[in-house]
Image 1 (cartoon, rainbow, N blue to C red):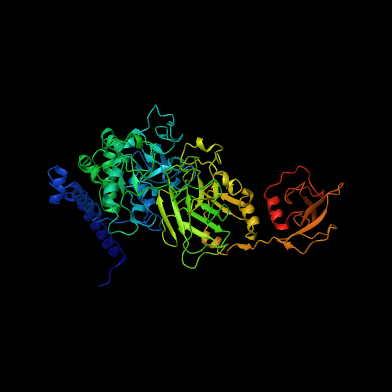
Image 2 (cartoon, rainbow, N blue to C red; image 1 turned 180 degrees about the horizontal axis):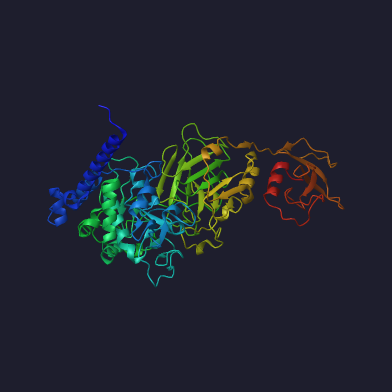
Length: 608
């Protein structure tokens, strides 16, 4: 029998309605919690252990879980948030999490608009490749600026007598606060309970078992000390009581289940479950600021101890005395950083790296202390694979990916609102530094007070670059030259491009390796006539001559850096000038500021 268009549409509509009715029935609370074991937990009569209760509720919220794409041409997270977070007083708008502002739905992903906030942040255990990335219980619309300012901070109540407390935490969110040296974030009072119940749900939903790219998420009073741990649990418990569930939260919970994800947040439907599933953590005021020895076994976890994976500390304190047995300053350089999801970092070695060699990259700030680093963020480690890595071959890291030599510990997640990266070696020597924090390197490392700040280790005085605060930064200078030339170019901010709008595919951009020319140390000719010696390297010739008005021999470098292609002589010795800075009308420039070019020419031409 042939079915006409009208009849076909009617059949499709009937099928869709049947599916909707099926999920509406499933998501009804009376049936969703109808299992005997679940009903007993809800009623408070269960004889199961704490761990068994966790498992029962985990099985419940995972049973029919349907993950929707984070970004897609089909229904994705953007679509879901426009629906479930719609402003009840304006169907064209969404309500923003921290600012509580009503914002047009069409202003998504715009600088003055809204984006998607992970309440349990990606850097505290939520990955880029697992189903937790797009779990819409954990996602809400947020003002883009406020989202960046919250960054990857954990949640905590900010004390009025804490000198680091800032109210508001963001000018766009007047009821927020930041505190504990910039490590913690306090949401507005009307959303504190909502935030707490989202985090309770996440710790039940994701236990690291049976799903790819999903970690065991834990709650603690010391979230910065352990991998995949969020908090501050004692404050979340207080917020849950102080800001009880309201009708809007119940409505959202039902919409998540019936229209998209097909699971509910049990702590919204049955708030009494919180006291059954989460014991108050043991008091540990020394951990309140997440400071101290990250390897200590302090009493900082709740009744379900988080995995004892210390984070944020180097394998040994980086050296400031230059006694490096392996990699040293300038041997591995950062050539690209993208701080929005997923984070990308590209690095290039100036020396051949043998199999098993390790170096680390951390976004923990350098504070000059005995342990050298703050311990509130994380570290990634690159172990050179079989066959080694040749000098000039670009090494890529992308957040959320392991393998290809990379491993991670802690909350390594460079902030979109400014941060600093330090590269150091497996035997504890600083190698390179890059900052794109608005304040640059902090002159006195002991004054480093927030997660975005860092001092510059003295051993990296010549091996670092300070860039503008942007999300995407890439070196665009020449990829050919001696080690010294390439180091100097990469450390020159003018040879970088920065923006916050367009991402690059670093794998394609750095498809061709750098050409690192072998260094040579031939002595110059003794002929003082100025005739070029038999040494030509990187478009420079080394010449002998005398300073005008003097019989004192001096070494000259002749370089075709003039815009018109002409050459000019610049003295090296008593006077030293970089060809990039010297006056085109003079053979030399007395008093001209000379930088790395002097050292470069000294190694290139030898000494007189």
